[in-house]
Amino acid sequence: SRLGSRLLIEYVPKDDEKVRELLSTRKDTFFDYTEELFQSAFERYFHIDSTFAIDGSSRKLYLFVRKA
Image (cartoon, rainbow, N blue to C red):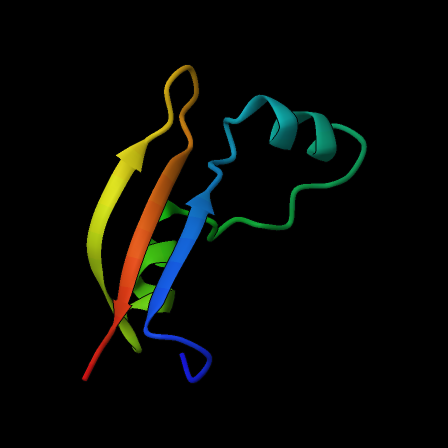
C-alpha cells in the first residue's frame, strides 16, 4: 500500500481452467482460498473501488484504492 494509491489485481477462482490444471498434479492445500477472503486481505489497506468480470471466464479484476 506504500507503493501507490491504487491497486489493480486479478482474482482467479479455483474453478478456473488454468488453476484446475495446475492443481491437478498436487494436493490442494488452499482450503480457505475464496473470493471473500481475497477481498478481506486487501481491505485492511484499501477499499474496493470497482470490480470487472472478465468475459468468457470466472475471473474478475479488482480496482482497489488506498484508504486515507
